[in-house]
Length: 482
Image 1: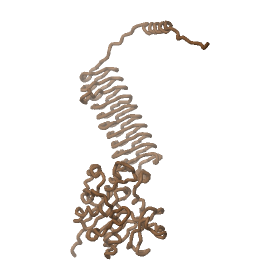
Image 2: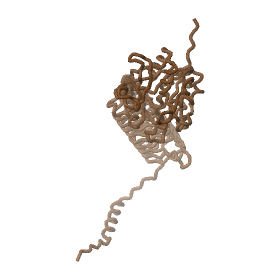
Image 3: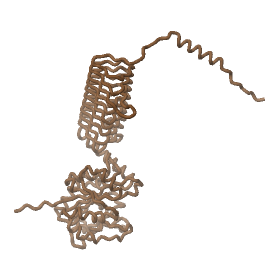
């Protein structure tokens, strides 16, 4: 027997709305939970089901911002210049979707949806050869949602969707709601979509009306009820968005702990959805791990540290109050407390960055140490180097940034100032409190400070002069009342 043709399936994500209840200038789908925009979560799930070029985001309000935020995902875009409802969104996407056999419609503001649920909807829709399949869910508190009216209690067929404001008292007791996620066979969808009308208070074309329209056309309209109703929750208000963020982060912590990560007091930690952590790493309370941060195994991140888009090797200790942004730390290094690693910092194996040390565009070699009160910017530092307390690299001349190079096994004394561009040769010593403005040859001692002088009795004489000056001052006049 010949093989059946594999149906071509697209995914359309509705992302054109403004989200007026958020009272924001930012488009609704660009508000973030779990460290990335609502829309990015939906795209991530969709692209696990179909290739990115088969995913279409239907955008309208602030379309340029949305395109810029997610175009790196490789999906395609359809512009809904005039936002006239969910039905109108598919009308304007008709040309983009015409080459497909089926389209799955997702909501861009429902970020908890998973690829598994999308696949289940697709499978049910195809297996039953439906023209329209609704993804539904039972909610304990369905107020505000459209209720799904089935042909009978045990039937998968849907008679209609009744919105909350139009529902009778008996219909309001129905717990099964329409999620706003759908599967359509493309041909009957576009054969009948022009029958949608704007005869409603908002004067919009509602995609929910397609259920009744297709029923009248004797097309098969079915419902697939998800066993995971939390996945279909949307975010129309900031309070709802924060609630979804809480759910997402709690699930992330649970996922990491099942993978062998210890997270103490997880409800105090902020861990973004893209974070990766190796087993036997310990996360203490009040830690934030943001963006695409990746931690190796056997690390310990102590309280009040914030790591954003940074990578740590195995066995790294991050002491309290450390800030990292776009930094890399190799295995067995020790960072903090209260260190600040700015973008471009690359800390070598078993190196130490300590109390109140700030780094920027720094490459620090294996086993090197800067333990106290230093600024190291635009610098390349070799292995086995000791940076004394209070050392700074002067990398900016007011116009350009310059690089300081410190070769292996250099000892830099405390409170030294290295004025770039300058190179300190291998094995050299920099005397404490030196201002170095010229390169130093290997194995040399460099001193750049004034010779010490001692003036005996100077301090005593100073105190005597100060005391005499105070005695010579006229006393303030005090007037007594008559």
